Image (tube, rainbow, N blue to C red; front, side):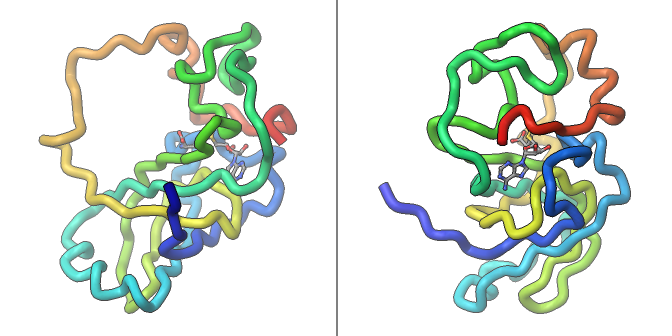
Length: 157
Ligand SMILES: C[S@@+](CC[C@H](N)C(=O)[O-])C[C@H]1O[C@@H](n2cnc3c(N)ncnc32)[C@H](O)[C@@H]1O
């Protein structure tokens, strides 16, 4: 299996310490997605969407543990029940706001990844496809309400 980045995400964060841990904690954090020239024709029609899903590589940090103490908790949890960045296939997923498209550059806000993060894919966010009304949020049930205040630390570096 081989994947190639289709662009680079630029954000204000060069250090994980103190940065947001989810887009819900990154309101107003602006940045850009620079799409490589060969993929720019694929951006046609994207501007009609207010939000997009970015899939990307957690390129800083190596290895993984199948039990982790997540940013949102003090107890170990199964890796796949968390959004921890160190994973067997270190793929990140962020729902961000698309402010504007300018050629190969997407202006976006709500960013929770490091500057220079390699972009793997872009998909339009469509509530009718993706939103669920009846949900359970497991161990995050209480903690999730505090996500906007939580910040990253050295835990997964
Ligand atoms: C908890 S993850 C959540 C990312 C995404 N919203 C998700 O759910 O997949 C966000 C944290 O990953 C770390 N991180 C962000 N970009 C990274 C990168 N390119 N390489 C390694 N770690 C990164 C930072 O600690 C950041 O606060």
